[in-house]
Image 1: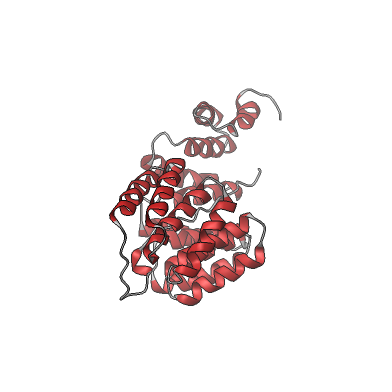
Image 2: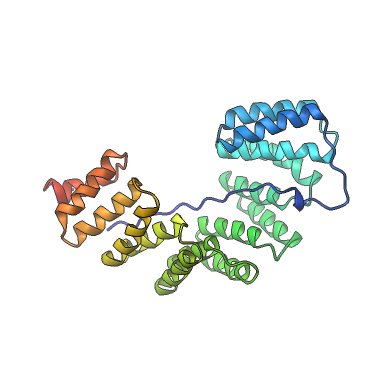
Length: 285
């Protein structure tokens, strides 16, 4: 069976509390209006619209105050989300010197450097981001997610274990499970993923990683246990259908498995076609 690959997404949450205290962050009303509308568009993943609105906010503010650079930072997030990494880098190079107390800026710029193939600069920004707040579990998780993308599993594990000391939550345990599994510590990985589910029984990523790793390890009955719970959380999830179909046909329950593989395929999961041909239509790949 082919290895089921994973994608780790780092979510950047803007928080004004990361700015140094005692500094007034005044903004003019017109710029604030455009920025508020842009925030709304970004929350709906309407990135092109948000970028235009942030443009208006920046022009209206003329970047006279430090607070005005927050719109530039959020515009960079939009550029990054649309894979426009060069414009994202331009914005972040404006933001980072002006708001050094915004570690998210360095984290996001590190991701941009990674996309542009500038590994040394990426690692430098990661190091500097944590120097400003080494006990911040959110920053540790973000850095760990980047290490995971670079297959640096030992470094990811180190950050996640430190993050757990300050805040243990489902996301931290999920990332730790991914790091441990890819480092070859399979049983420990499942322990971490089970802990994630224990901490938050509604945390869907933990079920999906656990079930995918079970499939990789040919633990099909165990995979079905995770998938049954995942299916209750998100009925109609095509990935759940796909994984469940794989587990069932591997357990020689082809009739039932083919039902789920068809649901996955007709739901847009093209990867299901190979299993359908082999197990359901009698056609070898």
